[in-house]
Image: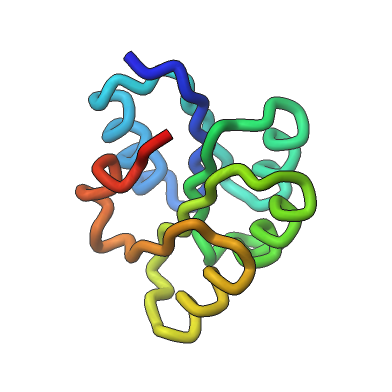
Length: 116
């Protein structure tokens, strides 16, 4: 079992459940989810997770805006997991401080990308 706290942020409940299940099966027990950027930032301010998996296309505040807020607070690892896979989107993610940027198509490979 892993004792690291992961926050997963996505507005699609089905994908949120899938990602959470992947990490639970891998032995992670401290997993929280958020369905909006505002909710994610509240959790981060209150509990400071060890890692954030963040979607770009969120209602209200998008993932890029959330990433900017996270970077103002912390250097915690942030993996962008999104359907927005164009080169300019990946560039924006890395420029704003993402540690990794993955397409949602590769969700099944996600756990192998995490080292916290």
